[in-house]
Image (cartoon, rainbow, N blue to C red; front, side, top):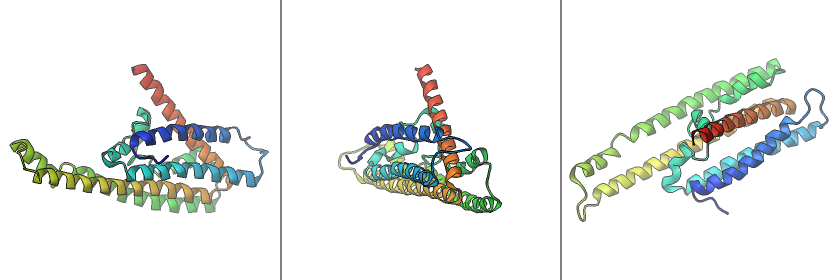
Length: 234
């Protein structure tokens, strides 16, 4: 079934999240140190996990392309818990977070790997800065002409029969804003995927498994804690 709104994407997300938890549990149950899985099995597990994560962004992109006014919900998703929203960066995790997780989960990096990761980190940081600059301008544009001028004019004069030029100005400005918001989110999601992909390429399969496990466990701790707090407050 094609995803045609933020509501239907939320339904997809709940099913995707269930499978995501299963993947993370599978990684958590792999033996540490001595392992009973072959290198080929490890590579397959990493590839399947990344493919599963990529599906989220593919479905999200498809949903946003037809979301209409719902597109704004993707920047503060109602299917996220309150604690998840605390770390949102243009509607998702900040790409640079992966390097902090490497520091805490992978302790056997070679010098060559460290150098490669430093290069990826620098490039990621640069692209994050560029995207945040674009996003900040978009947020500022909400309060600037041409979007607010028609609103102010209508507020002062009110609607009159046959007077639609202000409405058209608002609609046109909103369409431009939605289009640019979608493009910014698309670029942010692309950076998230590219960063993780490049990092995993540098790591060997056991190291990649440690990183993906740490990322998954961190995410679910954050989500579960947020849901617990929301339950208490209800």
